[in-house]
Image 1 (cartoon, rainbow, N blue to C red):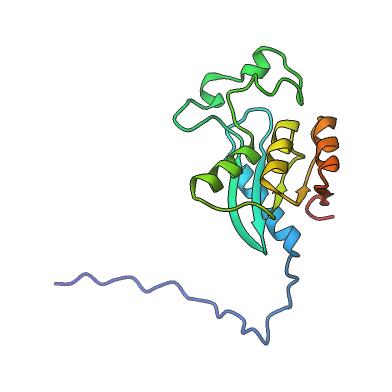
Image 2 (cartoon, rainbow, N blue to C red):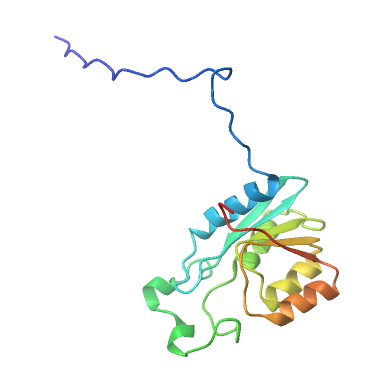
Length: 173
């Protein structure tokens, strides 16, 4: 004897496109920065969650977030070396277990053989000077940032190299 299946829940009709309220599509900059913010949610850094997205011709090339290298314990598991050593943000980048989001995006592109020259970077924060030098060398043309980072040298290097830096407004502004 077959068991009687319960009736499916009542479904509400979805409005047809003609009757649907018009919605505002995000600009390309909003779209890619939203993706960078979502990528940042994968960060394993205890101090700052950063996401980066490399884009060329409105196509997503690679993403990256800050965190420990592949196969190593995350800072959430072993603690923050920079906190223990009281290293201020923006200084002594080598004293960290993690890679920066921009570095991881570039490494992901390299691992998959993706050309970056002429791409744009969307990052939730301004790149540091180490990342800025890498972005310059691979030929990134514009860096869109959602926040600042206390590294004046990075801004100087990007400007000297002719890489445009554009600060995008926070969501909802």
